[in-house]
Image (cartoon, rainbow, N blue to C red; front, side, top):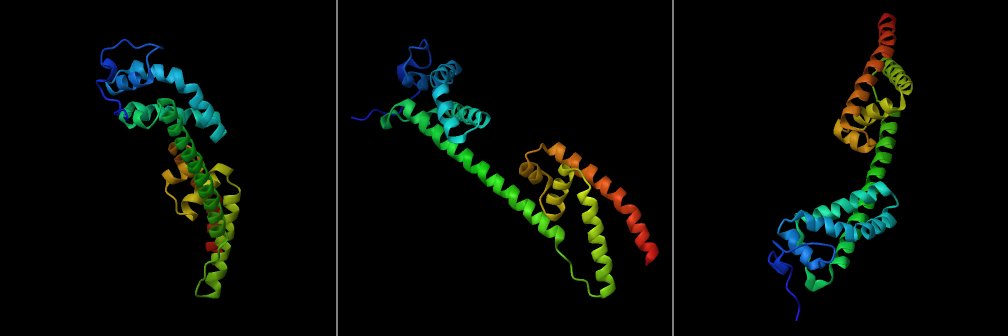
Length: 213
């Protein structure tokens, strides 16, 4: 006969003494009863193998640590997800770890693809010619584009990337932050400084153009 899922009353979870000898099922019952020491014992017991599994899948210590933290946070938030009738706690925990690690790899790969595509799109848009109705207007438009491209190329890499993604790629500042991996405040500062540099670089050129026309 299959055993029922772990419940709040299992093994006297709300008041039983908890230590390193306490069973996994009893500890999960204590987590359901909101006893944080139970999570500490489970982490001491399974944190290292969970990290080793996540590290093997992801390949980076920092991301692996984040995955393990997420796994135990998930256990604390919803301990009833563990159903002992379907197997032991260790197997369940490592299964959750594997799933979350694979998801983390997929998210990172998707983000890298978005960064690469956004950079390519911004470069293509930067070089794209706009059609003007008259020959004279086309000449001046081309001249302006060349000056803007030249001014952009002289910006620091981080400022040029942020402006390119925002103004040529159409991304919001928050999306630019996600694509570049920089804090939102840093992106805002880079864009502001970049715009100031562009204004200074283009100011003289534009005034000269007006005099010629």
